Length: 417
Ligand SMILES: Cc1cc2nc3c(=O)[nH]c(=O)nc-3n(C[C@H](O)[C@H](O)[C@H](O)COP(=O)(O)OP(=O)(O)OC[C@H]3O[C@@H](n4cnc5c(N)ncnc54)[C@H](O)[C@@H]3O)c2cc1C
Image 1: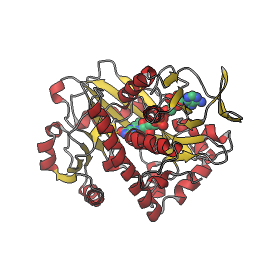
Image 2 (image 1 turned 30 degrees about the horizontal axis):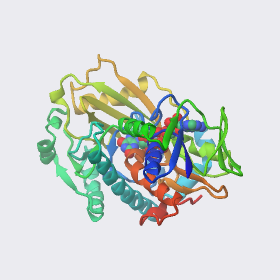
Image 3 (image 1 turned 45 degrees about the horizontal axis):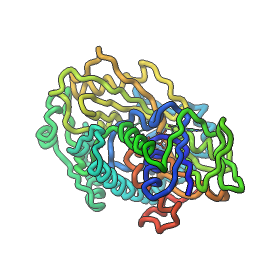
Image 4 (image 1 turned 180 degrees about the vertical axis):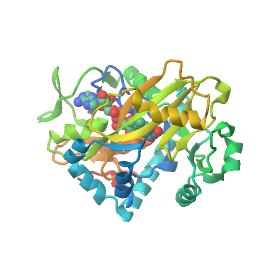
């Protein structure tokens, strides 16, 4: 059976890898000169079953509306884009009721648990070095009220079988002495010991190399797919080189998926939420934190990656634009200097980056057949969790293409639009 995978991000490449492992012949089409050139290039690197919480929530409209009036807000909207995105916004609000929000968080938490487990197994079975940090992930807070709220989430995690605990300030400092240098050490943190950190781009590159050396796999770079047609021989992939027919085509185009499928009269509400990261050299390796994590008040992740430090922040709903300038990294500098003073060597060259989170309007990816087009499938809309969810998502789409029974809970990611 011949399968085309559209998109060479972490979702497309894990999908291709899993399909090949199941005995299928796979061709990946990627518009860029490398794999993992878009959202999968320099994300926050957190594998986080411990914080797979959908952004849809009953108080979301209020929370997002108030950010508009806050200077230095971590969330931003472009009004023109907002107006064009009314169907997405309406769907987001419909899916922000307490019941739907909780059900979606439970579904993606379970998907994340399975996915993180599969990723650990893959890393155990291979010699891939992706700068893994295995001491868990910290979600730290600067107010007692926020820490108290985090206790409810911790109880939920424990009910799902996740190894998590709330740490007060002393326990946090004992676990991560680097906070001893903070301007104001956090009041405490959620520590999820089952979470881990690692470089998504490196994993994607390792898997791409294994696909290219497999007799059943190939990755075609610098090739934009312009459409998918229905031919007598199966779905056809159109590129500048013409049309190639396959038995199945899986669309894994990240934030571009909704626009791509719209051309085929398929509705898939995915909005790009732009985020920015800096990957920096440190002044002294001994000062690096041992554990990656998230400063909740600042919506800023700080992750040690080998000898480097990655700082990631901001979510802006501004359309499919990945440009950036120095001002976009002000939060990164301020938070890094306040939480770990003197750690980042700002004089050394920095790797600055912006990417688009593919945010589905109900917070869950769609991993299923596309209606009315035999042989066309989609695996997209993983939002701020695509690195975390990639392995289990690849497993589900492979199982479905093979016509086998899907894992329990996977029906939550069926086509529903
Ligand atoms: C700032 C930021 C921080 C994040 N942090 C985390 C984190 O800590 N943990 C986590 O789990 N997730 C995180 N994410 C989310 C995660 O990075 C994404 O969900 C994931 O990378 C999406 O992967 P993808 O393969 O679906 O999309 P992408 O990586 O964007 O891949 C899509 C690919 O399709 C290609 N493409 C598009 N159109 C075409 C076309 N017409 N023809 C051919 N190719 C095409 C693109 O070039 C691209 O390579 C973060 C994202 C951002 C932006």
